[in-house]
Structure formats: structure tokens, C-alpha cells
Length: 68
View (cartoon, rainbow, N blue to C red):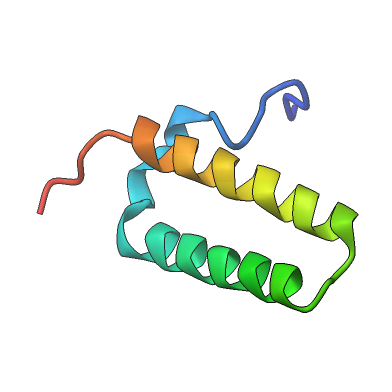
């Protein structure tokens, strides 16, 4: 049975693979937000993307260090 009350962004089991891929995604999201801002894109899209950026940053910061 699935637990729908859990927030996948804070689920510790998802935190193991952050590393380079999460940071690459974060970089792309920041570039997309800059593109939206520079081209007078829709404010709500920028706001949602900005919120997603902050959630991803928090998720990355909360992850345990990867063992190489």
C-alpha cells in the first residue's frame, strides 16, 4: 500500500543519488528561470520554478554526503 502523505522531496530514501545529476538539474532550472525573467515570461511560471529551485536546493543540502 502506498503512503500518499509522504513528501517525496523530503523522503530520506530518495536522497542517496543527489550528486552531479541533481546539481545539473538545478543549474538547468536556474537557466530556465533566467530565460523566463529575461523574456518577460509568465510570472506564475517563474514563481513556481523559483519555488522548485529552492526545494531542490534544500533537498540537496539535506542529503548525506556520498561515499566515493
